[in-house]
Amino acid sequence: MTSPIQRLREYGYELPAPKAPVATYVPVSRSGNILYVSGQISSSEAGVVTGLLGDTMNVVQGGNAAELAALNVLSQIVHMGGVPLEDIKRILKVTVLVASTPDFTEHHLVANGCSNLLVGVLGDRGKHARAAFGVAALPFGAAVEVEAVVEV
View 1 (cartoon, rainbow, N blue to C red):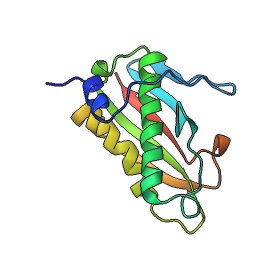
View 2 (tube, one colour):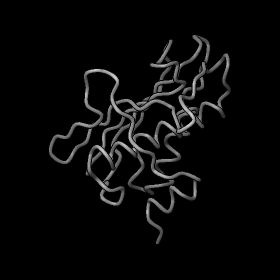
View 3 (spheres, rainbow, N blue to C red):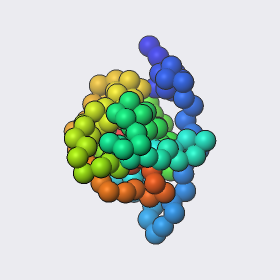
View 4 (tube, rainbow, N blue to C red):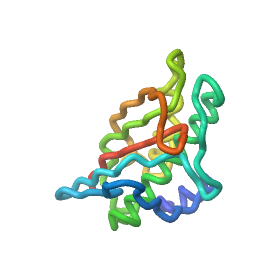
């Protein structure tokens, strides 16, 4: 049986260093066995993935951005929440914010990039409830932002 870290590597990723908050909030707060992970934007070592779905980005590019945002959620769980991926009991819910034009209607397809990574890495423990919707803009011009509620 492969570990979540091994499955993450199969996606071509290593767990990145966590992003520091840029305002007055904490990246992860905990109440009992529930972690609340603050919104994580679509970014990698190369920088923020920017764009607007329905204008400068297509659904595939948006899905890739959502995958990176989900990767950053996992990083926060491990590094700031102090919980190894193996100890995640379940991703309870994710909210996926998609920077998009008013006429863009495929937010759910963009959000699949996030969901597919979480399920691919965590198996059934990664299956979650989800909301996905469009917004006019995200911090730093990011294409996607993902927040999560996690049981540990």
